[in-house]
Each structure stands twice: as structure tokens, then as C-alpha cells.
Image (cartoon, rainbow, N blue to C red):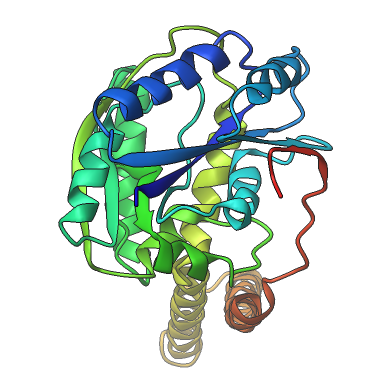
Length: 315
């Protein structure tokens, strides 16, 4: 009996790429992965360019294409994470965008590594067809995240991965309002291996990611698996308070033993008050932040808020 590979593909205003993407996936399984079946779950995040009509058209004659059309635009990560519950394959690729910037042919290497016994096979974007500045910013971000995270997240790795069924079913236990999918996957198993590839430029259409969305995703990645951003403020609060206390001792010594040589009336009191109470405020904010982080880890599981407008070929 053939094993089944589930592929989740986010789609937003990709009418020029949908058919090309489907034909490429079909070709891969017809020519290189003949011993496997596939189900392609395409999540349309409320497109406005008619992408949904094309999806309805191709799904009529292809029952292995499953379509989810959201009632509004929820963002790529929320949409694809929500689609995991509809997957039925023996292995899952949690995100392979329709724009094909992530190389679809890498699925062949993923499946081969998976059959060797690895639970997770992740794509490593070692090379990117993008500007030097953006590439440098990404590299710096990956280094920072790996230094401060509580788990080991492979650098240059996104959501383009293949994970075994026993793991991706575990992902359904997370009810996160903004899932950092690559981090969640990395936390499930260390039985993993990477495959390098070059991230391509888009052939058709325009990228839907902008600076704000990249910044938002980056911040989510930093806080999802680390308390470091909060603890660094606690450290600065302690440091400022300590310096202020030292300044108090210096001013006390100057006032009583140096006959006021270093004193200007009122200045010492003002400086001590500002620095000391500022330090105390930052310290307490840091402490409060620690408690918020602890609460955050326990209750960051609100009810799922993805409302699906239409489902096609899904039981």
C-alpha cells in the first residue's frame, strides 16, 4: 500500500501560480515519487484576485486537492497551522507556498531522508536570491534567536519541512493564537536532519511579505521560546539601581568629608532621585515581566479563531 504525503500550501492572490504549482507537484509524484500518493491542502487566505475560482476549478477533477478558503485574511502562519488538522498523510509538509520560492523538488530528498528513519527533515535556506542587506539582517536574526531560545532551532530553517505523522499530530495539542511553527516542530524531536537548497526569486506575482510582517514574525520568534528579552531589562534595572546606590555613597562621603567641594546645592539630590527611582521602576517592570512571561507560557492557548468560509474535497 502506498504511503501518503500531505502538503499544506498557503495561497494569497496567486492566480498566476496556482496551476503551475499543482502541475509541478503532480509531476514530482508521477516521475520521482511513484510509490507515494499525495494530498495537496491549499489554504486560500481570502484572496481578492480570483484565486478561489481557479482553486474550485482544478479541485473538481482532482480529488487529492483539498481547498480551504478562509473568511478573512488571517496571515500565512495561522492559516497553515490551522490546516494541519485536515491532514491525513503518513508525513506532512506544513508549509510549501504556492509561489514556489521554496523548491518543490526538495520533497524528493525529504521523503528519502524520512524513509531512512528521521522524524523531521528540514530545508536549510543556505543560499537566498536576495539583496546583501536583507540577507545580512536575516543571518543576524538567526544567530540571535538560536542564542536566546530555550530549544535548539536550526538556523536558516523555515516551515518548509517534512515531519512524521506521530509528530504532526502532536502539533494539534497546541492552541496558540500566533504559532511559531518552526519552533514548535523543533521542540518535538531531535531526530532530524537538514537538506540545503537555494531560496528562489518569484517567477510570477509580487511577494505579500513586507517589512512590518517580517518584523512581526521576527518578534514572535524571539518571545515564543525565550524569556531573555524580559530578563535583560531586569538586569538593567539591577545595574542602574546599583550605580545609583553607589552614587549615593559618593555624595554622602563628599558632603561630610570633602567640605562640599563636589557639591552644587540641589543637584546631588535631583540626580540621585532620578537615577535611583528610574532604576527601581525598571527593576520592578522586569520583575513584573517575569511573572507575565510565566503566565504567558501557561495561558497562551486561546480558542482557535480561524473561521473557514468554504471547504472543498474535505470530509
